[in-house]
Amino acid sequence: MRASTTRRGLILAGGAAVAAGAAPGGQRRAAAQEAGETARIGLILPMTGPFASTGRQVEAAVRAYLRAHGGSFGGRRVEVLLRDDTGIAPDITRRLAQELVVRERVRVLAGFGLTPLALAAAPIATEARVPMVVMAAATSAIVQRSPYILRTSFTLPQATMPIADWAARNGIRTCATLVTDYAPGLDAERAFKQRFTAAGGQVPLELRTPLRNPDYAPFLQRVHDAKPQALFVFVPSGEGAAAMKQFAERGLREAGIRLIGTGDLTDDDILNDMGEPAIGVITSHHYSAAHDSEENRAFLAAYRQVAPDARPNFMAVGGWDGMHLIAEGLKRTGGATEGDRLLAAMKGLSWTSPRGPVTIDANTRDIVQDIYIRRVERRDGQLWNIEFDRIAQVRDPGT
Ligand code: PHB
Image (cartoon, rainbow, N blue to C red; front, top):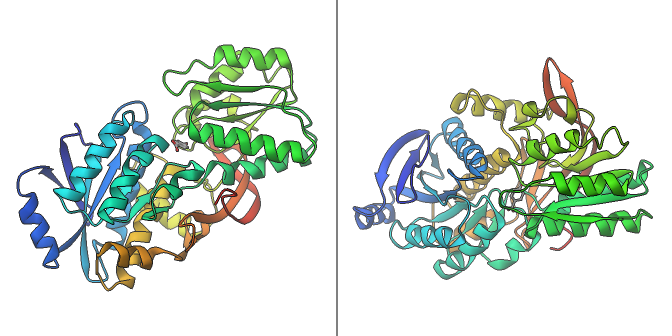
């Protein structure tokens, strides 16, 4: 299911999809909501544009959650209004958030595929006193932009520190960095350098590629010429296959340069498309579709029901857990949706996610979670991120 334009929306209620115009009937629906019928959640995601894969992943997980758990929590029926912000213009995200709270009277804002888009919506959440559940964006500072923000994704420093430690422990002394040139990339670059050099490593080259239409080839050529022992990469979800292809074509592996990164690089959504060059790549991240647990098996089964041909990635688990946070919050308030009450009910919640044990820290409103070190391996003809080490309950160092 897609939202084809930013002006049209879709309602997902208990897994059923109902097309809905944004403008007419808004006031009538808001009145019905106050009378106790529904709690509306405004889900803003990039469903089109260069980061549409993130939107698809999160939206499918939200739908899967509602289908698996029913559409009512704490006696309150939940409706999700999906809006496509196209993943590029913060102005669009801000306008959609505004419309959702003013016209549609949503009780929660959720989604947010990229950092600039989450930052654009933050003041709206504060002004409207509406909880805002960040399911995807991962720059450290996001949670500080509004006291109404809670996060179920991850942060780049949280995911990066363990791979920096791993590299230093595993004989890598020189490591270049290559990150996408915007906030989460800069977070990753900083965290890697700080941690790796503190452990005695050296970063001889720090490269930044543009967010829009990146061409990795010239950057990788510079890495090839500098000949570090390894290259650390952060690229946003969806970009990993292009970066991996160029890494292979430039002959970096043959030159003896190891590729490491955060798990954004070996994104489960596109890992199988990467083929041979991905095998053996080591990353650190909070979720692998290969994670061995009951909760993950249940998640995979639920996800398959709504997206039979896709493998859920780390964005999808952020969507699933974001819905869980809202559902548990509603249970705690007995279905009450008043913003400050619902926010207070969501703060401090802990549960076993498909990724492992997680907590929404009551003070920072950020997620505390296990981070895994994984190696790409072929199993039964498919590529997987196989977890082989775990760092328990990692917090974002900035918060
Ligand atoms: C972000 O913009 O915050 C972002 C997007 C994709 C990722 C990680 C972070 O994979």
